Amino acid sequence: MDRLVRAVAAVVRGSARLLADDRRDWAHALLAETDEVATAPSARLAWLAGGLWLVAREIVVYRVVPVLAFVAGAVGLVWIGWPGASTNSATPANRMYVVGTLVLLAGLPVLVRRFAGPVRRGWAPSAARLGGYTVVLALVAAVDVKHRIGSQLGAYFPVVGGVWAMYVGFLLILAGHVAGLLILTSRRIRVSRGVLPAALGAAALIAAVLYLLAPYGIDAAIERATGDWGQATVPDYLLLGCFALAALAVPVAVHAVTIRLADNDGRPGVLAPARQAVLATTCAMAVAAMLVAVLTSLTIALRPGDVPRQPAGDGICHNCEPPTIVVPSNLRQEYQAESDVAHAGGSTLLALLVVPLVGAAIAAGRAGANGSRRPGGPFH
Image (cartoon, rainbow, N blue to C red; front, side, top):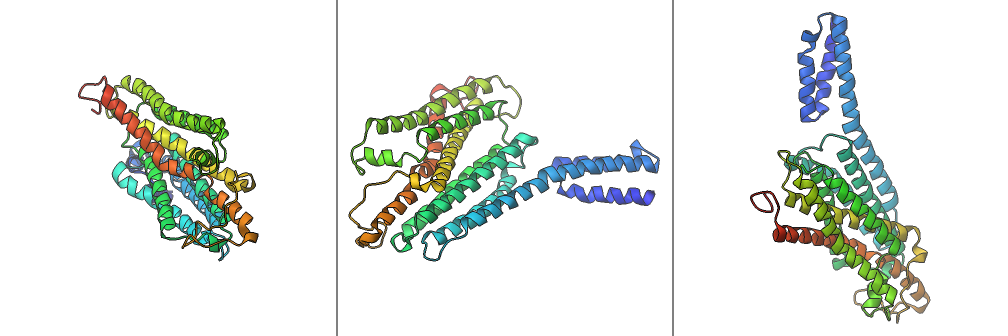
Protein backbone atom coordinates (compact mmCIF):
# COMPACT_ATOMS: atom_id res chain seq x y z
CA MET A 1 0.00 0.00 0.00
CA ASP A 2 2.82 2.43 0.86
CA ARG A 3 4.41 1.75 -2.52
CA LEU A 4 1.13 2.59 -4.25
CA VAL A 5 0.81 5.78 -2.21
CA ARG A 6 4.31 6.85 -3.24
CA ALA A 7 3.54 6.04 -6.88
CA VAL A 8 0.36 8.16 -6.88
CA ALA A 9 2.22 10.99 -5.13
CA ALA A 10 4.92 10.85 -7.82
CA VAL A 11 2.27 11.07 -10.54
CA VAL A 12 0.67 14.09 -8.86
CA ARG A 13 4.08 15.73 -8.46
CA GLY A 14 4.99 15.15 -12.10
CA SER A 15 1.59 16.25 -13.40
CA ALA A 16 1.79 19.47 -11.40
CA ARG A 17 4.39 20.74 -13.86
CA LEU A 18 1.64 21.06 -16.46
CA LEU A 19 -0.52 23.28 -14.25
CA ALA A 20 -0.59 27.06 -14.12
CA ASP A 21 1.61 28.69 -11.49
CA ASP A 22 -1.10 29.21 -8.88
CA ARG A 23 -2.53 25.73 -9.34
CA ARG A 24 0.95 24.23 -9.22
CA ASP A 25 1.41 25.68 -5.73
CA TRP A 26 -1.92 24.16 -4.77
CA ALA A 27 -0.74 20.71 -5.94
CA HIS A 28 2.47 21.02 -3.93
CA ALA A 29 0.46 22.01 -0.86
CA LEU A 30 -1.75 18.97 -1.36
CA LEU A 31 1.33 16.72 -1.35
CA ALA A 32 2.78 18.43 1.70
CA GLU A 33 -0.43 17.95 3.68
CA THR A 34 -0.84 14.27 2.83
CA ASP A 35 0.75 12.97 6.02
CA GLU A 36 -1.02 15.57 8.17
CA VAL A 37 -4.59 14.91 7.05
CA ALA A 38 -4.35 11.13 7.15
CA THR A 39 -2.14 8.53 8.82
CA ALA A 40 -3.53 5.28 7.46
CA PRO A 41 -2.16 4.30 4.03
CA SER A 42 -5.67 3.83 2.64
CA ALA A 43 -6.69 7.31 3.77
CA ARG A 44 -3.55 8.85 2.25
CA LEU A 45 -4.23 6.99 -0.97
CA ALA A 46 -7.80 8.31 -1.08
CA TRP A 47 -6.53 11.85 -0.42
CA LEU A 48 -3.95 11.62 -3.21
CA ALA A 49 -6.42 10.00 -5.61
CA GLY A 50 -8.80 12.91 -5.12
CA GLY A 51 -5.97 15.35 -5.73
CA LEU A 52 -4.88 13.44 -8.83
CA TRP A 53 -8.42 13.66 -10.20
CA LEU A 54 -8.47 17.43 -9.73
CA VAL A 55 -5.02 17.80 -11.31
CA ALA A 56 -6.04 15.65 -14.28
CA ARG A 57 -9.20 17.68 -14.77
CA GLU A 58 -7.23 20.94 -14.74
CA ILE A 59 -4.77 19.56 -17.29
CA VAL A 60 -7.52 18.31 -19.59
CA VAL A 61 -9.57 21.51 -19.45
CA TYR A 62 -6.75 24.06 -19.66
CA ARG A 63 -4.08 22.14 -21.59
CA VAL A 64 -5.38 19.19 -23.59
CA VAL A 65 -8.66 20.64 -24.86
CA PRO A 66 -7.11 23.90 -26.16
CA VAL A 67 -4.35 21.97 -27.92
CA LEU A 68 -6.81 19.57 -29.54
CA ALA A 69 -9.05 22.45 -30.58
CA PHE A 70 -6.10 24.28 -32.14
CA VAL A 71 -4.97 21.15 -33.98
CA ALA A 72 -8.49 20.63 -35.34
CA GLY A 73 -8.67 24.24 -36.50
CA ALA A 74 -5.22 24.02 -38.07
CA VAL A 75 -6.14 20.87 -39.97
CA GLY A 76 -9.33 22.52 -41.21
CA LEU A 77 -7.47 25.62 -42.37
CA VAL A 78 -4.84 23.57 -44.20
CA TRP A 79 -7.54 21.43 -45.82
CA ILE A 80 -9.40 24.50 -47.08
CA GLY A 81 -6.64 26.98 -47.76
CA TRP A 82 -3.71 24.92 -49.02
CA PRO A 83 -5.09 23.33 -52.25
CA GLY A 84 -4.81 25.22 -55.50
CA ALA A 85 -3.73 24.75 -59.09
CA SER A 86 -0.25 25.83 -60.08
CA THR A 87 -1.81 28.12 -62.70
CA ASN A 88 -3.85 29.93 -60.05
CA SER A 89 -1.94 33.02 -58.97
CA ALA A 90 -3.58 32.96 -55.53
CA THR A 91 -2.11 29.59 -54.56
CA PRO A 92 1.25 30.88 -53.21
CA ALA A 93 -0.44 33.70 -51.31
CA ASN A 94 -3.06 31.37 -49.85
CA ARG A 95 -0.37 29.03 -48.59
CA MET A 96 1.47 31.97 -47.09
CA TYR A 97 -1.75 32.90 -45.30
CA VAL A 98 -2.11 29.37 -43.93
CA VAL A 99 1.45 29.16 -42.62
CA GLY A 100 1.51 32.73 -41.31
CA THR A 101 -1.83 32.39 -39.53
CA LEU A 102 -0.88 29.17 -37.79
CA VAL A 103 2.48 30.58 -36.73
CA LEU A 104 0.99 33.71 -35.20
CA LEU A 105 -1.84 31.81 -33.49
CA ALA A 106 0.65 29.39 -31.96
CA GLY A 107 3.37 31.89 -31.13
CA LEU A 108 1.49 34.92 -29.84
CA PRO A 109 0.17 33.21 -26.66
CA VAL A 110 3.74 32.41 -25.64
CA LEU A 111 4.85 35.99 -26.26
CA VAL A 112 1.86 37.64 -24.59
CA ARG A 113 2.13 35.34 -21.57
CA ARG A 114 5.59 36.74 -20.81
CA PHE A 115 4.28 40.29 -20.53
CA ALA A 116 0.61 39.99 -19.55
CA GLY A 117 0.55 36.68 -17.71
CA PRO A 118 -1.54 33.57 -18.36
CA VAL A 119 -5.22 33.47 -19.18
CA ARG A 120 -7.59 34.49 -16.39
CA ARG A 121 -9.31 31.78 -14.42
CA GLY A 122 -12.82 30.79 -15.38
CA TRP A 123 -14.59 29.56 -18.46
CA ALA A 124 -15.35 32.97 -19.99
CA PRO A 125 -11.75 34.04 -20.84
CA SER A 126 -10.95 30.61 -22.26
CA ALA A 127 -14.18 30.61 -24.26
CA ALA A 128 -13.37 34.09 -25.57
CA ARG A 129 -9.98 32.90 -26.78
CA LEU A 130 -11.49 29.82 -28.39
CA GLY A 131 -14.14 31.92 -30.11
CA GLY A 132 -11.60 34.48 -31.28
CA TYR A 133 -9.33 31.82 -32.73
CA THR A 134 -12.30 30.21 -34.49
CA VAL A 135 -13.28 33.52 -36.08
CA VAL A 136 -9.72 34.20 -37.27
CA LEU A 137 -9.39 30.72 -38.78
CA ALA A 138 -12.77 31.08 -40.49
CA LEU A 139 -11.82 34.49 -41.88
CA VAL A 140 -8.52 33.29 -43.34
CA ALA A 141 -10.17 30.20 -44.82
CA ALA A 142 -12.89 32.31 -46.44
CA VAL A 143 -10.38 34.82 -47.81
CA ASP A 144 -8.33 31.96 -49.27
CA VAL A 145 -11.38 30.51 -51.01
CA LYS A 146 -12.39 33.95 -52.29
CA HIS A 147 -8.93 34.58 -53.71
CA ARG A 148 -8.79 31.12 -55.28
CA ILE A 149 -12.11 31.67 -57.05
CA GLY A 150 -11.07 35.15 -58.14
CA SER A 151 -7.67 34.22 -59.58
CA GLN A 152 -8.30 31.21 -61.79
CA LEU A 153 -7.06 33.15 -64.82
CA GLY A 154 -3.72 33.36 -63.10
CA ALA A 155 -1.88 35.11 -65.91
CA TYR A 156 -4.21 38.10 -65.57
CA PHE A 157 -4.06 38.26 -61.77
CA PRO A 158 -0.34 38.39 -61.01
CA VAL A 159 0.72 38.75 -57.38
CA VAL A 160 3.25 41.57 -57.68
CA GLY A 161 5.25 43.28 -54.94
CA GLY A 162 2.50 45.65 -53.87
CA VAL A 163 -0.01 42.83 -53.58
CA TRP A 164 2.40 40.79 -51.45
CA ALA A 165 2.82 43.81 -49.19
CA MET A 166 -0.96 44.00 -48.72
CA TYR A 167 -1.11 40.30 -47.91
CA VAL A 168 1.62 40.62 -45.29
CA GLY A 169 -0.13 43.70 -43.91
CA PHE A 170 -3.32 41.69 -43.54
CA LEU A 171 -1.47 39.09 -41.46
CA LEU A 172 -0.02 41.85 -39.28
CA ILE A 173 -3.50 43.26 -38.71
CA LEU A 174 -4.71 39.80 -37.70
CA ALA A 175 -1.74 39.55 -35.34
CA GLY A 176 -2.83 42.79 -33.70
CA HIS A 177 -6.36 41.50 -33.20
CA VAL A 178 -5.15 38.21 -31.74
CA ALA A 179 -2.69 39.97 -29.44
CA GLY A 180 -5.47 42.25 -28.21
CA LEU A 181 -7.68 39.24 -27.49
CA LEU A 182 -4.92 37.51 -25.54
CA ILE A 183 -4.08 40.63 -23.53
CA LEU A 184 -7.69 41.39 -22.62
CA THR A 185 -8.18 37.84 -21.34
CA SER A 186 -4.93 37.76 -19.36
CA ARG A 187 -4.67 38.04 -15.58
CA ARG A 188 -2.87 41.36 -15.50
CA ILE A 189 -5.75 43.22 -17.15
CA ARG A 190 -8.57 43.72 -14.68
CA VAL A 191 -11.73 45.54 -15.66
CA SER A 192 -15.06 46.07 -13.94
CA ARG A 193 -17.72 43.41 -14.08
CA GLY A 194 -19.99 43.73 -17.06
CA VAL A 195 -17.68 45.96 -19.10
CA LEU A 196 -16.43 43.39 -21.59
CA PRO A 197 -19.78 41.56 -21.92
CA ALA A 198 -21.46 44.89 -22.68
CA ALA A 199 -18.81 45.75 -25.26
CA LEU A 200 -19.03 42.34 -26.91
CA GLY A 201 -22.82 42.46 -26.94
CA ALA A 202 -22.84 45.85 -28.62
CA ALA A 203 -20.28 44.63 -31.16
CA ALA A 204 -22.26 41.51 -32.02
CA LEU A 205 -25.50 43.47 -32.39
CA ILE A 206 -24.09 46.16 -34.67
CA ALA A 207 -22.16 43.58 -36.71
CA ALA A 208 -25.34 41.58 -37.31
CA VAL A 209 -27.23 44.69 -38.41
CA LEU A 210 -24.49 45.89 -40.75
CA TYR A 211 -24.05 42.45 -42.26
CA LEU A 212 -27.76 42.14 -42.97
CA LEU A 213 -27.68 45.56 -44.65
CA ALA A 214 -24.77 44.58 -46.92
CA PRO A 215 -23.97 40.85 -46.89
CA TYR A 216 -21.48 41.28 -49.76
CA GLY A 217 -19.89 44.42 -48.37
CA ILE A 218 -20.20 48.06 -49.32
CA ASP A 219 -17.55 48.06 -52.04
CA ALA A 220 -20.12 48.41 -54.84
CA ALA A 221 -21.81 51.33 -53.08
CA ILE A 222 -18.44 53.02 -52.57
CA GLU A 223 -17.54 52.54 -56.23
CA ARG A 224 -20.84 54.04 -57.36
CA ALA A 225 -20.58 56.91 -54.89
CA THR A 226 -17.12 57.77 -56.21
CA GLY A 227 -18.30 57.55 -59.81
CA ASP A 228 -16.27 54.51 -60.83
CA TRP A 229 -19.29 52.27 -61.42
CA GLY A 230 -21.75 54.85 -62.63
CA GLN A 231 -24.28 56.95 -60.78
CA ALA A 232 -24.91 56.28 -57.10
CA THR A 233 -28.47 55.90 -55.87
CA VAL A 234 -30.19 57.02 -52.70
CA PRO A 235 -29.95 53.51 -51.16
CA ASP A 236 -26.18 53.63 -51.74
CA TYR A 237 -25.85 56.83 -49.75
CA LEU A 238 -28.18 55.54 -47.04
CA LEU A 239 -26.11 52.36 -46.74
CA LEU A 240 -22.85 54.25 -46.46
CA GLY A 241 -24.47 56.60 -43.97
CA CYS A 242 -25.51 53.67 -41.77
CA PHE A 243 -21.96 52.35 -41.67
CA ALA A 244 -20.56 55.81 -40.90
CA LEU A 245 -23.16 56.37 -38.18
CA ALA A 246 -22.32 53.02 -36.58
CA ALA A 247 -18.61 53.89 -36.58
CA LEU A 248 -19.40 57.04 -34.60
CA ALA A 249 -22.31 55.95 -32.41
CA VAL A 250 -20.96 52.64 -31.11
CA PRO A 251 -17.80 54.13 -29.53
CA VAL A 252 -19.83 56.85 -27.83
CA ALA A 253 -22.35 54.36 -26.43
CA VAL A 254 -19.76 51.83 -25.27
CA HIS A 255 -17.68 54.59 -23.70
CA ALA A 256 -20.66 55.90 -21.73
CA VAL A 257 -21.70 52.45 -20.49
CA THR A 258 -18.14 51.57 -19.49
CA ILE A 259 -17.66 54.78 -17.51
CA ARG A 260 -20.92 54.16 -15.65
CA LEU A 261 -19.96 50.58 -14.76
CA ALA A 262 -16.35 51.39 -13.87
CA ASP A 263 -17.10 54.41 -11.69
CA ASN A 264 -19.03 52.17 -9.31
CA ASP A 265 -16.18 49.67 -8.97
CA GLY A 266 -13.80 50.44 -6.14
CA ARG A 267 -11.88 47.16 -6.11
CA PRO A 268 -8.09 47.48 -5.94
CA GLY A 269 -6.15 46.64 -9.07
CA VAL A 270 -8.97 47.52 -11.46
CA LEU A 271 -8.04 49.89 -14.27
CA ALA A 272 -9.18 53.50 -14.10
CA PRO A 273 -12.56 54.17 -15.76
CA ALA A 274 -11.05 56.14 -18.65
CA ARG A 275 -8.59 53.36 -19.44
CA GLN A 276 -11.35 50.80 -19.26
CA ALA A 277 -13.41 52.93 -21.62
CA VAL A 278 -10.61 53.07 -24.19
CA LEU A 279 -10.02 49.32 -23.94
CA ALA A 280 -13.72 48.44 -24.10
CA THR A 281 -14.41 50.79 -27.01
CA THR A 282 -11.45 49.53 -28.99
CA CYS A 283 -12.47 45.96 -28.22
CA ALA A 284 -16.06 46.55 -29.33
CA MET A 285 -15.00 48.15 -32.60
CA ALA A 286 -12.42 45.45 -33.31
CA VAL A 287 -14.90 42.65 -32.64
CA ALA A 288 -17.58 44.32 -34.77
CA ALA A 289 -15.14 44.79 -37.65
CA MET A 290 -13.94 41.19 -37.34
CA LEU A 291 -17.46 39.76 -37.31
CA VAL A 292 -18.53 41.81 -40.33
CA ALA A 293 -15.36 40.77 -42.17
CA VAL A 294 -15.77 37.06 -41.48
CA LEU A 295 -19.50 37.02 -42.28
CA THR A 296 -19.00 38.96 -45.50
CA SER A 297 -16.02 36.86 -46.59
CA LEU A 298 -17.88 33.62 -45.87
CA THR A 299 -20.86 34.83 -47.88
CA ILE A 300 -18.67 35.72 -50.86
CA ALA A 301 -16.78 32.42 -50.66
CA LEU A 302 -19.95 30.34 -50.43
CA ARG A 303 -22.01 32.31 -52.97
CA PRO A 304 -19.59 33.91 -55.45
CA GLY A 305 -22.20 33.93 -58.19
CA ASP A 306 -24.26 36.52 -56.31
CA VAL A 307 -21.45 39.05 -55.90
CA PRO A 308 -22.42 42.46 -57.38
CA ARG A 309 -21.04 42.73 -60.88
CA GLN A 310 -19.07 45.64 -62.24
CA PRO A 311 -19.90 46.73 -65.80
CA ALA A 312 -17.68 45.06 -68.38
CA GLY A 313 -14.62 47.12 -69.17
CA ASP A 314 -12.56 47.71 -72.26
CA GLY A 315 -10.52 44.53 -71.83
CA ILE A 316 -7.50 46.23 -70.29
CA CYS A 317 -5.90 44.06 -67.61
CA HIS A 318 -5.50 46.57 -64.81
CA ASN A 319 -3.94 43.93 -62.56
CA CYS A 320 -1.16 43.10 -65.01
CA GLU A 321 2.35 44.47 -65.22
CA PRO A 322 2.43 46.53 -67.38
CA PRO A 323 -1.28 47.49 -67.13
CA THR A 324 -1.60 47.76 -70.91
CA ILE A 325 -2.11 44.05 -71.56
CA VAL A 326 -5.45 43.35 -73.24
CA VAL A 327 -7.57 40.40 -72.13
CA PRO A 328 -8.80 38.34 -75.10
CA SER A 329 -12.44 38.98 -75.91
CA ASN A 330 -13.46 35.38 -75.19
CA LEU A 331 -12.07 35.65 -71.64
CA ARG A 332 -13.32 39.10 -70.69
CA GLN A 333 -16.55 37.97 -69.05
CA GLU A 334 -14.70 35.38 -66.99
CA TYR A 335 -11.97 37.87 -66.16
CA GLN A 336 -14.49 40.45 -64.97
CA ALA A 337 -16.43 37.91 -62.90
CA GLU A 338 -13.26 36.68 -61.19
CA SER A 339 -12.08 40.22 -60.60
CA ASP A 340 -15.39 41.11 -58.95
CA VAL A 341 -15.12 38.13 -56.59
CA ALA A 342 -11.47 38.79 -55.77
CA HIS A 343 -12.10 42.43 -54.86
CA ALA A 344 -15.48 41.99 -53.17
CA GLY A 345 -15.45 42.62 -49.45
CA GLY A 346 -12.12 44.40 -49.57
CA SER A 347 -13.46 47.30 -47.52
CA THR A 348 -14.34 44.97 -44.64
CA LEU A 349 -10.73 43.78 -44.48
CA LEU A 350 -9.46 47.36 -44.49
CA ALA A 351 -11.93 48.10 -41.70
CA LEU A 352 -10.05 45.63 -39.49
CA LEU A 353 -7.33 48.28 -39.25
CA VAL A 354 -9.30 51.51 -39.45
CA VAL A 355 -12.36 50.81 -37.29
CA PRO A 356 -10.54 49.90 -34.03
CA LEU A 357 -8.34 52.97 -34.41
CA VAL A 358 -11.42 55.14 -34.85
CA GLY A 359 -12.95 53.67 -31.71
CA ALA A 360 -9.77 54.19 -29.69
CA ALA A 361 -9.44 57.78 -30.92
CA ILE A 362 -13.04 58.63 -30.03
CA ALA A 363 -12.74 57.05 -26.58
CA ALA A 364 -9.44 58.77 -25.87
CA GLY A 365 -10.87 62.08 -27.04
CA ARG A 366 -13.89 61.77 -24.78
CA ALA A 367 -11.67 60.81 -21.86
CA GLY A 368 -9.47 63.82 -22.41
CA ALA A 369 -12.43 66.18 -22.79
CA ASN A 370 -14.59 64.93 -19.94
CA GLY A 371 -12.01 63.44 -17.57
CA SER A 372 -13.05 60.97 -14.95
CA ARG A 373 -14.72 61.29 -11.60
CA ARG A 374 -11.79 59.53 -9.98
CA PRO A 375 -9.09 61.84 -8.63
CA GLY A 376 -5.78 62.20 -10.41
CA GLY A 377 -6.96 62.85 -13.96
CA PRO A 378 -8.78 60.84 -16.59
CA PHE A 379 -6.26 58.01 -16.89
CA HIS A 380 -5.37 57.54 -13.20
